[in-house]
Image (cartoon, rainbow, N blue to C red; front, side):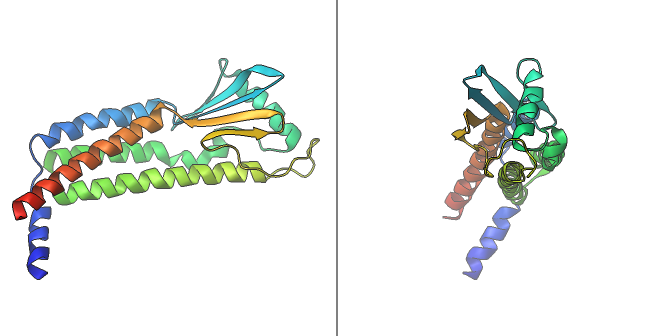
Amino acid sequence: MRVALQKFYVFLEQPLFLSARPVLVASCLLLGVAFFSPLWRIEMVAPQYRNGLSIDIYAHTIKGGHDGADINEINVLNHYIGMRKLDRAELSDLDWIPFAIGVLALLTLRVAAIGNVRALLDLIVITGYFSAFSMARFVYRLYIYGHNLSPDAPVKVEGFTPAIIGSKQIANFTTTSLPGGGTFAMGAFALVVGAVTVWHLWAGKRAAG
């Protein structure tokens, strides 16, 4: 057991394969896509809104459909059921995401330039934590948003959690919530880093074997 651990520690200090380094550099482009593309899209359809209302949530802003007019319309509807105004301040929990994406990009470039297997493993762990934590905070924020309703609202509805993934009927609205291009890009980045990590672990096991 002790010998195996010593071999593993030695393996952790091994430099990355030269062919893996440009792959990691290229994967930073996916982080750029994650920053500039919507992370999530929410659509609402009702008999009186047959063309639907939509919101795109980015890492750095929120954009409404129909040239931004949908956000104002949704806020008017939310007022009647006592929901707080939907704006970037209400999703302030996401303010750290642009910073985190930038840190991931810098760490990835550092690993590609001077990193070893240990640094690569650290990168995949940090990527997994960032993805899981950001998703958990998003779900939590939607839960709070749908349950903290004003008791003085003109229309009384029970607290609810908006759709996270898929569709959900809320009053006479069908709400659909799906990940956007930014989330898929972030997932692709995690897959690339994961694949490079597995490649090194597999090669290290063969060498030890």
